[in-house]
Length: 373
Image (cartoon, rainbow, N blue to C red; front, side):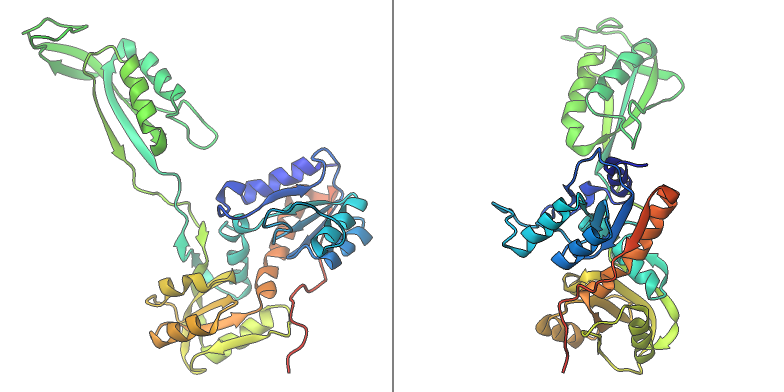
């Protein structure tokens, strides 16, 4: 039987907390990492009603998208809705885990699940996520001094690639040429005479923030008074498939027909599906963003998308966006869009944990709107 820590590690492997926005609050909110997990309930919001469902089902973990505590608090008394949620879970010995903006951008995350639910194919992020900024250091060194130079730059932070460290490349020997001038104190050679030395070329990648430390370490370990080296900034490779929102294609249709397919694909809400644009407009290329997505309007205004699907669009930004002649707009319930991720997460957990853990998607709609007249 897996422990809570095992499940948390799985989720964090799929949706690394380090990729969450700086303002966000993700990760394990409540629970003993060593406690066993037999049942996991999945939901969008950690409301008191969802907490009660978790307790009644005797869940060991409630895994949600939206944080329970996004801002600092000074107490969690059961006199508040958030306090009641936590007290309900605590009494039931049910842990609470949040994957929010770290799940939004990920492969298989919220926006991607939303796009797949709407039938989009050939998906790419609207805004690709940048990967860590890297440099590459190249240095030439006598063959017998290569090992200490490689060790020095590795200890200073170079050569770390994923789950590996001390990574470097050393090419076949070449010839280094130089002539020491007056004032030099050469380790090899004589002042005023041309010297040729068998050297190797060492190449190593490093985080840009460690550039100064790595260069200092290389200079300190290098036997030469004036080593030959260069540092180049590497182009951002971008993390494949990771980023904000998704854009893809659907079978050719009209805006009206596409909006009907959106309504059919999502769980029903009182909010429904709102459409801005000519119902007969051709639709082939679609952009989506799970959750509140009006922050992408400026970026999409001049794009080749025929329609943009998201939630929580406001009057003035939407009106000004349409005036620019860009994509049509489809506005859906925030909860409904993000709910599409829960079945995906459910399958991931089942595939990773097998029969050892029972999983379930909450049947409670936490969309706040209950009536439309």
